Length: 510
Image 1 (tube, helix red, strand yellow):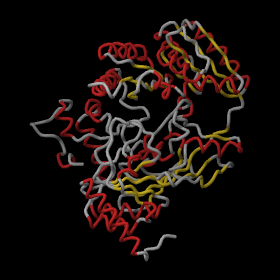
Image 2 (cartoon, one colour):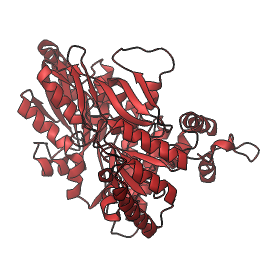
Image 3 (cartoon, helix red, strand yellow):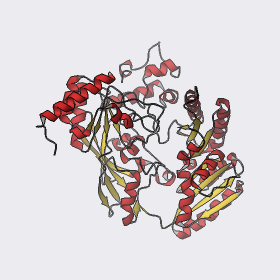
């Protein structure tokens, strides 16, 4: 147990910390730094520039910034101490999980503390009888299913980064994955969580029970991007492993046919466990990278996973095959053995890293549209790709209309990054015009603040600010993320103002 009595060690640590902060010119005051050095064990506090480099960004690597200090939390008590200190001194806090997010939600700020929960990685309990797991926020997504496997159970949400991404981050972004079509996003698979407020108070929402009175604050914390509190524990819903599965791969001569096949399947009443689409560029990259056995003479493929009782799967399989053929599927493969199914999914799971074979950098977008608009929006993306002179690979959750266009660019080439960001913005605008939204599972972070101004009215954004203010009155938790200021929206011209004034100007500073 760490002791407060080692004052000589604290003095050395404080001196090092002050020198580091002075060198960077970060606006963290000395009184706060001394208090932080006393409250945090020496091995849990990082202040040297080089040691903080791994924390300067998340998966949105184009945007980087060093924090003022990093705290590697390993207990709820330590998180409470840090948050109380930050509130007392008015210092911002950015909570971070594994850092795999793709919207800049965990990007630090120089004048603040980055609070990492990656060391809180215990699976506290697997309750097989009640099909639930209690875990700390630093537990990886895949580790939950591995721990539940001996009991014949698994955790359904499975982002492509499930090997590395943490449950705390999944909650903060309301992550999904291949199987979210049938089994839901993170919010549908969590029955309880515990979080710490900026005041250092510990709040428990939900639990082992399935229903709770009052406002649904449990759902509110999902997708809140660390702006309302720091999640320190979650109770996850576990599902029994399906007795039988099969995976169908269908190749199509044109991408519109694949999009129409998606609509046919859902309209027929079939809800696959997974229904994914990849276009020609993504197919070739994934096949070259993973050797999954994908056909290379098609414009698009669908991966359809069906699960359930053997008789049920056999019946639905026949029905889905008929629907795929009716929409012109030129190539059709069926996998029923575990190894064969894993091989087909391997290409889809490896699609993002496979882009490295096509370009030095890629910019991953995340918009969601009504399934009926798939063909139109994909066509629009093709037009925008030619207009900007940047290739776009499409690999996404077709069943629920969650697009993931991957914009390929070279950051070393003049203006390529700016072009990629502008193209990404236009793709999100196209999603909004199609009746969709600017995010399905990656969150808003810093990436999509401008598009929030298009999707929501001034009154709606004011309500978001009012809600944050109820949890975080001084705007210290992950400031500048997820919800734009009203002034920003007004400057962009995407918001109507009355009498030359924005509504609720008192909220605009948050």
